Length: 84
Image 1: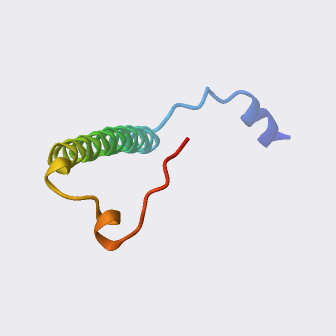
Image 2: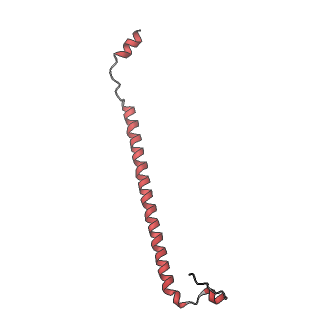
């Protein structure tokens, strides 16, 4: 009975410095993971846009040079079927 009375009248639990340091470390870890994920997503988006831009440039250069060369199908004897 003495133990229950002692537990009943104890002061509220105060977070110790160890628990506070652990909470701060956990908070910092979560913030770092979030920042890393945001940076990774932005970098992947930038890389995708760069790849698309490179593809656009290649398409433009190929279409501007297309008149210089004969149609490959014509060179090897195939005929193209028009798409209607």
